Length: 368
Image (cartoon, rainbow, N blue to C red; front, side, top):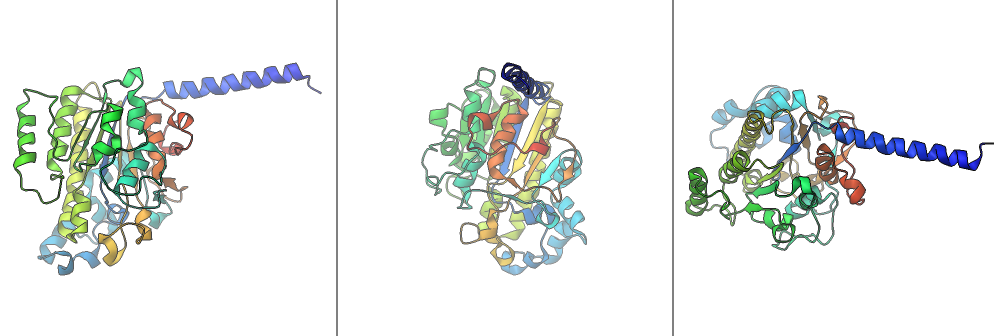
């Protein structure tokens, strides 16, 4: 029989070896910066299958079917999804990972029970659902997001920023409490004085006719965030875009697909921009996901508890610490609640250990 003191010594050695191994893995991370982009309510169906023929009708505001099909229809789903989102399929799918293709046994879903925006954004950024977060009303998030959690660490102090088309993004990140600067809705960016491009973007927010309350077209928050990225060089940049959801609620399949295509162009521009900057090149990870899904067929315009399948989402990762496994298939399900810890994990931070109710990182998206 092994004597107790010896056995205790062995256990202590194994324990500290495990801690050292974990620390070594974190220290070996190449990622120093994270860019996270969310596009509101973009369905997994279009992401993985491309345009849906049954929705390319006058009922969903497709006036010129022939022209629309020339733009977005191809005979195979692989070709359709690539013409819709060429950066996602031409770069991310080849160099990173995408989860959520239910046709291939790769489920991704939200764990909150509401399947709409505020709860989805909160779950994404906090790592857990909260039954108190049950509306889209303008109230400060009672929970601490991973952005706020990171911002309290000295190495990230003043190096995190959020941008959003939807005005609620400021409340979701709880900018007043967290101290994370957020520019959302029609708010101007005021921290880059003397930048003429930002001055123009601020004017566009005020002077462009408003189609939706408190929400400009995606072009304005995107280019505002891009200017901030180039000038202030944050270590974590969060950006939420909204047109995919707004056009879908309006039953406008033309503008919905066009918005999805434009978001794909935006993440390409972001990626090419950071790869051109020494502060970011080859040491930046991109995370891309929606806040919720949508229904099937004619229910594609809707989401929420009355549309159960709107719980299904997708998520994509691209960067130096993500193995190039492409579009995942026959893989364990992943959840929206895992994104916060995954974001922190890329930066060598163990969010789940500090917030145990948060989901664990998506293990295969992080190089070990």
